[in-house]
Amino acid sequence: MSASLRVEGLSVRLGAREVLDGVSLALQAGQVTVILGPNGAGKSTLIGALAGLVPPRAGSVWLGSERLETLDRRLRARRIALLPQHTDIAWPISVRSLAELGRIPHQGAFGLGEPDRLAVDRALVRAGVDAFADRPVAELSGGERARVLIARGLAGEADWLLADEPLTGLDPGHALDALALFRGEAARGAGVLLSLHDLDLAARIADRVIVLAEGRVQADGAPADALTSALLQRVYGVTAEVRVTAGRLRIDILGRDGHGE
Amino acid sequence: MTRLEGVLLAGLALLAFGSLWAGPVATPLAVLAHPDDPRFIILTQLRLPRVLLAVLVGGAMGLSGAALQGYSRNALADPGVLGVSSMASAGAVIALYFGLTAVTPWALPVSAALGAALGGVLLMTLAGWSESATTFILAGVLLNTLGGAATALALSLAPGPWAQAEIINWLMGSLTDRSLDEVGLAAPFILAGCGLIFLTGRALDALTLGEAAAAGLGVSLRGLRVLLVAAVALSAGASVAVSGVIGFVGLIVPHLLRPHVGARPSALLRPSLIGGAILLLAADTAVRLAPTPAELKLGVAMAVIGAPFFLLVLVRGGVQGRWSAGR
Figure 1 (cartoon, chains in turn brown, purple):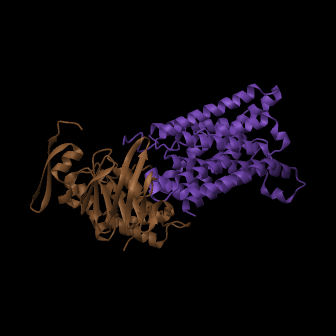
Figure 2 (figure 1 turned 120 degrees about the horizontal axis):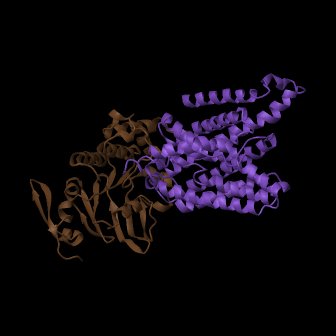
Figure 3 (figure 1 turned 180 degrees about the horizontal axis):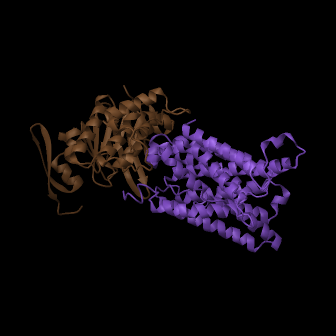
């Protein structure tokens, strides 16, 4: 069983702005947790802090009984895989080379070992990109590229997988493919945290949603409990109809609220 | 060792033997067994230091270029373009100006390395946080201007025409009339710098995905910056100290070799080291053998090859994914 990943009373300031203000939450292994919230709500900062990359102003981030900031950065990277937003691939490396980057925290002085190669093979197969493993990433379509980047995240076989807006720029079909990959990771026992903008997709995939606004947690729970029309109005400033049809939570955004609070 | 590295090494060995042999007086290696033969002096005092320096300096430039391109995620980076060589040159000129080289011959490489280190620190301060290739190039423009101004100041204040001529001659970049003493001065710095660069391979690979992803993979970006500045200051600084500014080697070599190593920054390091040595040794042998009235300066010859190449890379969208693909 993997050690829990949690933040306690976390506050982060970037410049003069309090981006996170007293956030406390614990992620569950084997679950897909989705962070929602308007632009600038602090989603990326929270993900960065959970990956140990954003220093807290107050509060703390814990992996099991250890504070994340005191953990050796390579050991931390072996246990927490981060897929940042807008990843731009600088060189036309092959799909396999890109997935191998996910093994960097495991890599010894003499490069990749046999266990690393096997893990990369597994990740390529799970992400469904093994058929074109030797192609340069520069030649791939957006959907293929997104899957390869996810394969990189899977290759580390970390206990925790944090992905910041992994569906940006994907059409609905490819978005569902990507979500299936994350579901598979959770089924494997990993704790998965995604930030998304699409409420419908969030409701479809999440075991739990955390709604963030103005640096604070506004709602936290199963999608059907957390995503109420009152909450959506308060957080996004939209009028929305939330109902359950054929066992599925459906969210219809009806319009923008007139007042700007 | 990969096949590419084997081929490059074989090419370098052939070229080195050819360069030792060729000249107005052919000197077969067999004369090494006859110290009383006049050709022994030509081989050991004239040609050998030149070949050794071309290999050391070219290798250091090629390797530094590969590392800087990897770090800045930009195919247009090298110690010359980014202004590190220019700052090293300013450091060396200042040592020449104050006559420090008369006190100890080590003053020249040390002062050049300090200049290069200052350039490296300024570069990282100005552009180290940036993901943008443009920021790096602009920081390089700034450093080149600064280094050029410091050099011009030293020149204009130089105590006499002789000192001025010495500085100018040295600035043009050449491996002519170097001795084994100069090889001994530069080699420790260059080898140490190159050794440090090889420690950055894994971090450079991680940077393929940008700074956030690299940090997420457990790479210390600050550690990488410190290591890279120290390494490039040592290798580029000492190179400039013995040869003057010879640009473009670090730009051309990694760019030509990148497609042959699958574009992975770490896989590009060793081939760029060997390839840089080949390019500079070939260019130096060419200017030495060319039937020009006065020997063409190596720095000038490299600029003649390098400048159009720079333009070609720029036009073809060498900064892939950022300038050309419009992402």
